Length: 424
Length: 180
Image (cartoon, rainbow over all chains, first blue to last red; front, side, top):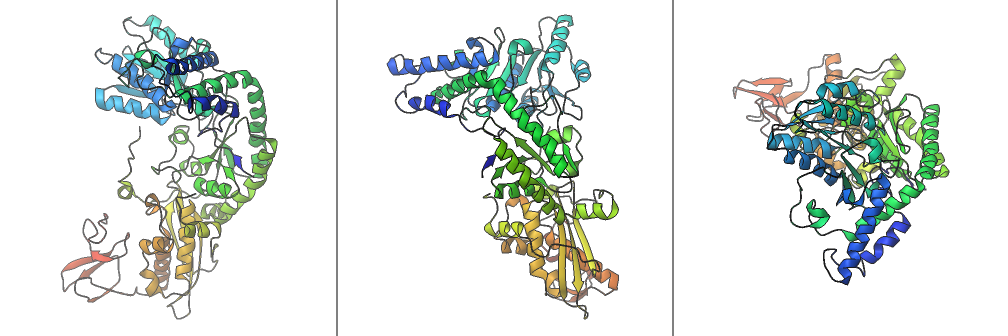
């Protein structure tokens, strides 16, 4: 049995999506900017896709800019709005401490290049941003706040609506009316999974990616509210109204559009299906396994996200053994990451560094079945037990009833010098 | 999972010699749970004090850490202390058909833990560690963390990374790692 539970990394493409894409990989290969019939066919297909994506998040089609991936949409939002303000005295932005690295590194790059200051908005132990802190961090020269709608690792959904209200109030009361603080939300993990309505959220920019909701990799979008200006990050042509040059990836954009349409039509149905399975796993795993902790918000979380820390063992080992059983997951442990760094998200919510090593993210999809969840629930406990039987931390705990204190440690600073360990 | 060799996966899936020795002659722990790898080695030494009769271990860590522990235990069983002290991390990695570069130093701790267990045994027994040879003049020196070779007027130490006896300077002359 193959059980794919890594749906925040990528989803299985919907058959209907693929079907709709294929003509644009074969016969309709024209460039959407060409004036002849083949070009116009491509252009029309992109227009339909734009319409469908705009319906998914309740905006107008002109407010959608297609990009190649979620990271590009995030880069465009952050760098594009900062560069627009670069000649003014506005040099401050706020990002939450658990943002995707495309947001965090964009902020860092802007600091390097333009001396932009950024503040990290802290989160509580559930990963919810601290709204009071936001009020304290907002400054006269703050041009942008970026907070993700939902976290892909721990699933916590942020109170974006309230953040938008705080910012609106701040903009109304600020002295210098020339500046307006914009709100961007990275909705890559949320869009197509939960109801996302930009009018209700009150955001100026929003990133989404089709690969998260059964569309292809290679097409994503940035919602840019009418009247909001940004500096393009790819110059060269008139595509996307001059806001993102480059020959359109027609087939993938068509796929994104179809995926958006399907997601919109089946949102509630998929939501109910996944949340039932999610809650079964969240309920049953701690019944079968001791010393396991749920990370993220217990209620305000994505319907497809489960993140557990299994104490006394390490995530990559769990991942490898699950892989042997045909169960595919991801882990936030240091060993799993190529940079040998513990997940910054788990660090930010204050999970003990040793316990966080045993963290595993399970993400469901609309294709996940009851049988697959039963299979996971059957295979997981012996794997955890097996690794604990190997673990010196567990045997120490069994003998003494105490957790082994972190020792003097081994400093491998030099050995990792080839890896960019710089983190915000 | 292509990042690991077949040999690594074999030892990870079926680790040899797992466990603890209740009346161990020496115990050595290396690593830190915060780093994601920690291993404890237990050894039993023959009555003549020369041979490692039994090795067991417990390991917290990734696939590489578990495979390394298993491999080290197999390599050490039945060997003399003298031979085992010559084991290096590179030898372990080689026997495992290679390790991904990022795992070479953080997960490849088995030899260090085993050496620590031997150290523990030697300290407990108050047996003077075996003789080490000065790498410059081949003179026998009583093994210690830092040894003085009077003939060469040099301080000698064993590099914790590559295991070679080298002059005690800022960096190891063999592998270039910081040792001071």
